[in-house]
Amino acid sequence: MRSPARLPAALVALPILTLLVVPMVALALASSPSDLAEAVRDPLFAPALLLSARTTLVSLALVVAMGTPLAWWLGRSTSRTARLVEVLVDLPIVVPPAVVGIALLQTFGRRGLFGGWLEGLGLQIPFTTTAVVMAQVVVAAPFFVQAAASAFRGVDADLLTVARTLGQSPRGAFFRVALPMALPGVVVGAALAWARALGEFGATLLFAGNLPGTTQTMPLAIYVALESDVRVALALALVLALVALVLLLVLRAAPALWARVGAAAVATGGGPDRSEEAGGPGGAGR
Amino acid sequence: MSWRAVVRMRLGALELDVDVGGGDAPVALIGPNGSGKTTLLRTIAGAHRPDGGAIRLGDEAVFDSEAGLDVPAEHRHVGYVPQGYGLFPHLSVLDNVAFGCAARMPGATRAERRARAREQLAELDCEYLAGRAPAGLSGGEQQRVALARAIVAGPRVLLLDEPLAALDARGRRAIRAFLGRYFAERTRPALVVSHDARDVRELGAEVYVIEAGRIVQSGRPDELAGRPATEFVAAFFDV
Image 1: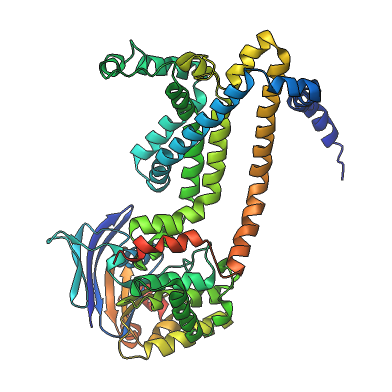
Image 2 (image 1 turned 30 degrees about the horizontal axis):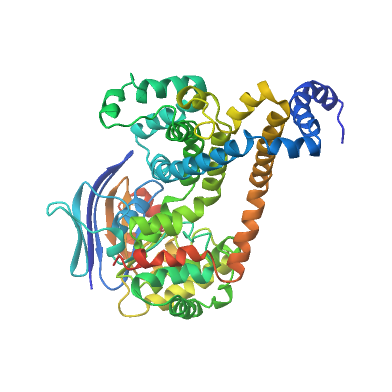
């Protein structure tokens, strides 16, 4: 089915496709197994890996915990305030990370907006692991909030009304109907947010610095390693690329996987157990 | 028992100002699109808060603007079946109906709720659907499941939004037969939105005609057909 018009289009697309794919292939081919084995033993490697794992999991938990109520409100409200807040939430997506870093410093730094107040409390935020987490939360949250809000928007209001008339409190209706229905979108949002947090570089460098074991996450360690031992930089990059690839595949496969799991759950007459357990507080709301 | 809803509210372009009520028998609500039928149902169910008025279900006031009373939806004990049926897509048919048991059977185990749900499904001749997902059902099947779920909760008033619309001939027959049996009982307060004169006649119900948010006429179908107050009523009863 090759139409004549398609060939030129493919030719035009070739350079950009090359640019997208070839560097990844080059990265995969760059290290020999022995190089990798050595790089993994480098003192830069393990602390950066652990710090990245720790901080991104904490930021993901914070983003989901704080972002879900916000996304719910954005998804359900038709008010003008909600539309305005939606635009504000998207700010970190368009603002360059370096700008986010400077802005965070101007807020929580010693001479920042809350600087004096924080100093009075004996708290220092910049150049600590807390700062790493904060930078990640700021840059990652919009991805989660956006995806979750649009998932919540897709939940038919009549279904929530029905749930309420069947004895569910607003909370019960959320946990037993809205959340299970929006879950695929919410999970995709969380995955995107986590990927963004894992890759965070600019804001972290400016606001948290580059201290091994404390604020030196994997992207920062790559930057440092590039000046000393390229093999370590490559190994770190490979790990990040691999995680990203797995994430991408899971996200791509998620909708189909979800449908199958859902169908299986319904077929066994089970349905998600979670919703049944949540029936306690909701069901007893009478 | 009797029920009455006096509702005054503005929602978008709609200005609702109605006074409807009924007793043990079902009451029909007819009117052109956008006249406020669905909004009124949702308001009685507790989804919208009126600007003014009072809603009483049996002995209990569930809304009273002057007394500042607004009983939340979960404590009103109304059964609401929206257009599109409102089945929860992530639950099986059985669990959809068991969901409706939660309010009436607090403290019941999951197995007990499911057993009750199965009985209710059997009453609507659709026990065979128990393990299915709502997405795979025909309109008529979905409507039966939705009715089972609303009824199993033991509502004081049943609110049905176009229960027979969007069904094929077979589905209509099944639902009509069930509603006929159901409403033949002595105490079945209900407000049923309809756009079909035949259904309204079969319901044998008092009819309210709503146009642009106002009740323009009410009475028995024959009275309305005999002296239609508006063009809509005349067209509805084909006179």
